[in-house]
Length: 200
Ligand SMILES: Nc1nc2c(ncn2[C@@H]2O[C@H](COP(=O)(O)OP(=O)(O)OP(=O)(O)O)[C@@H](O)[C@H]2O)c(=O)[nH]1
Ligand SMILES: [Zn+2]
Image 1 (cartoon, rainbow, N blue to C red):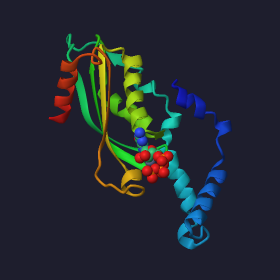
Image 2 (image 1 turned 45 degrees about the vertical axis):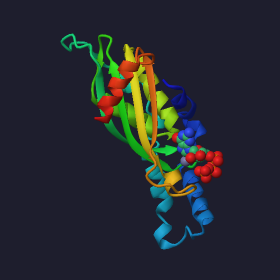
Image 3 (image 1 turned 90 degrees about the vertical axis):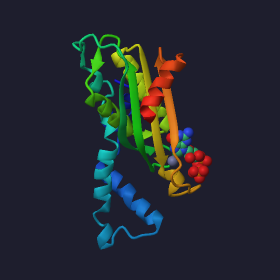
Image 4 (image 1 turned 45 degrees about the horizontal axis):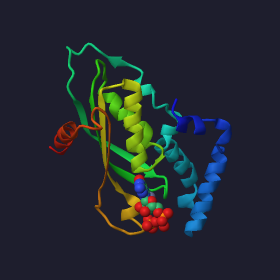
């Protein structure tokens, strides 16, 4: 089980639903509105329910999607790329959304992973408070640990609402992060191949 889940999954350390709803009422008052008015009365319940979905990744061990792998693939050994996996996450600095796409490539060492599991892995890490660098590193590390392939490449492209809706207010700026592991870490040609397929 990964460290983040271990730290946060102890129910005893979590506030109750009532405490969480009270915190939402406090934030509504901080924003300048009245949590008692009709339109806002159910909002704390809705917000905590939404948080349950948006941050469900704290309750999901990242090794789950990697529990089952396959080797009956006709001797296939070349690179596998799953690109354009959409995600929504929240930055840990402002708790505002950042969203975009994850591209994953790996070179199997005999075993391959079911294609849907890459998207499941992305979901688990995206539904936590994150930085883009962290989510990129976590996806790559999980694949490296769980699949033990010859090489791994992970690239994330995202727009951060904390930069477009507030603060510096620059809409449309894209942040790119990428990590290479194993044979892909030191091979310019493998990296170029991955990047050209992702960019195609
Ligand atoms: N490296 C990195 N920075 C991020 C990410 N998400 C948000 N940030 C940045 O985190 C920084 C936090 O900076 P601070 O100066 O502590 O906070 P702030 O006063 O709200 O900063 P501004 O956004 O510039 O107004 C900002 O520069 C954000 O753009 C991320 O995923 N990775
Ligand atoms: Zn932010």
